[in-house]
Each structure stands twice: as structure tokens, then as C-alpha cells.
Amino acid sequence: MCIFSQPVVSVSDTNIFARLLPEGWQYLVYQMRFETREKNAMVLPLPVQLPATDDETLEFISLKQHESFFEDLNKGFPLALPNRSFLSQGIDSKVTEMKPTLEVHDVGDFIASFVPSIGDFDRLDEQFRIPQESWDKIPRYSDFGFAVFQLKSLQGQPHPMAFKFRSRLDQPDNGSVFFPTVHIHDGQVHRREKFDHTLFLQDPAFDNACGGYKQRGYPVTDPATGYVRSKWPAKEFCDIDASCGIVDPDALVHRLEMRGRLDNVDVLASLHPSDFKKQSGLLPWLGLPITVGVAGFFGLKWFFDRRDRVAEESAEESSR
Image 1 (tube, rainbow, N blue to C red):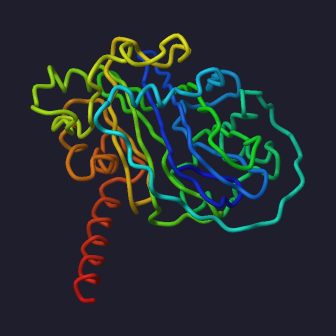
Image 2: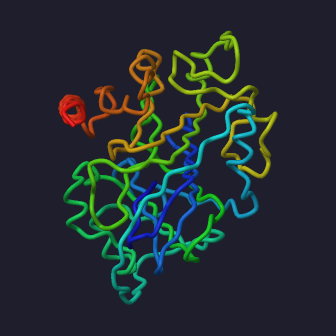
């Protein structure tokens, strides 16, 4: 889902689009359905280029006139509609007084701010800060920047949040696309969470890996990438003009669904062909910790720890 500054009642139907540009910018579009009992904000951690600055690192984009952004993307997968089923729970907490101290941008249904680092959160409205003890539990964000979207309503499905940021994961011939998927809904960082995500990405490396898509039947997960590719290029089913340049009209769209109770981690999709095999399989989104060259957040220790936890959980279930 995402990181909220205050507890939420429920979050579901999360969609994320990402595309890495040659000059180091990454597009990111995010939409979800939510309900909260008090004013809230969503926080998206980002692996920005350092040093990060307020006006040169991130650019917000309003998609208020294109609320059907993700509906369009799904039209490229005519026989595979996403399954919407899971919710995440939150708890109540007291509302604190708002004290605006950081530059804000009016972006359609949101008031948005870019927070260059964890140390800059004290420049943000107090109500929309994440407790320091929460950040202490996820030290990999110590040098991240953050896009913060203050929600103007208490429930519903607002139009997609969109922006582009300067990514430090853009490497010559070996870039990676970052999807912020870690959950913090009640001020706590839980090891596992319920996921109801659909990830979309565009990149020439993924298109080349799929080739002519000669597999029989449609749709199927491509064995090279672990994602399902769209049946046509994006211009055949997306409103390209309304997407504000975010969608590449001539590229395919690749989709990955994450459903159920999964490890609470971000997703890093490597764009290097040698890593495609590592990203595919039963759990392709867990390619992040395996691809050590570009995923220093977790490393192999995280992967082996997870393997041991899965073995322990399986043994416990067998003994019941």
C-alpha cells in the first residue's frame, strides 16, 4: 500500500506505474482506495540523487484531468482483470495541530510537499510527520527523499498522484525501477503485510526481453521478466495526451500483481537482462534483495533470513 502519517481504517486497490528515463529521472504514478478517520498524508520514500534539493530533485504532475490513468493501462490486458480483495487495518490516534513549515504544492486533489531527507520532516506540518522511532526501524531510508501527499478527503479513491524524481538507481545499461510498497499504517513497521497491489512499468529492456511474445494463449507471465506484457503498445489503449508525457506511446506496458500476505519490502525491478531470471518465478517482486549489484537496501542476508523464516513457518503449519 503506502506509508501514512496517521492510522487508517482501510487501504485497497493500490496501483503504481513507473518508468525510468534515460537522463536519470523516474516517473512514478500512485493511486489507491482508502478510508481514514482524521486528516492524513501519504508518504512515499524515494531513492533520490544526492544531494537532494527542494526545487531540483522532484517535480509534481497533476493528473486531475486523467482520473482513468490506471483504467487505461488495464485495457492493455483485456483478458486479465486485477482481483481486488485485500484491506489493511489501522488504529485510532489523536489529531495534532497543523503547523505548515515546508513549501507546499496544490496538485489536484492533494497538497503535496517534497521532503529532501528524514531530517527535514520537522519542516513539514506536525500532523503529517512519521515518528522518528518508525524511521529507526527502516534505516535503509536514512538517505532517501520523500514525496508527501496530504489527502483532502477522509475516504474514496482520489485521482492518481504523479511526479518525477531524479533517481540514483539510473545506471548506464543497468538501471532499476523503484516501486514504493513498504506499509506503515499505524506508526509500526510490521514484518509482513497484506498486499493488494498492481505494478505497471515501461522500459525498452523489458520489451526486448519479451520479443514477439510467441507464447500461445493470452495473457501469460513472460518467463523472461516475470511480468505480463500488454497485448499492444500503449498508444493503442491509453490516452497519451492526458498522461502528460508519463506514458511512452510506442512501448509495451508490463504488469505484476501482488496479492496476499507478503514480506513488507519495496520492489526494485532491475532493467538489466542478466537479472530478469532472478526477478521471475513464483515471487518475481522479491528479485530486489537477490539482485545485490543494484539493491544494497537489504542484501543477501535479508534473502537468507527470509528463506529461514519461510521454512520455520512451513514447519509450524505442518505440526498443527
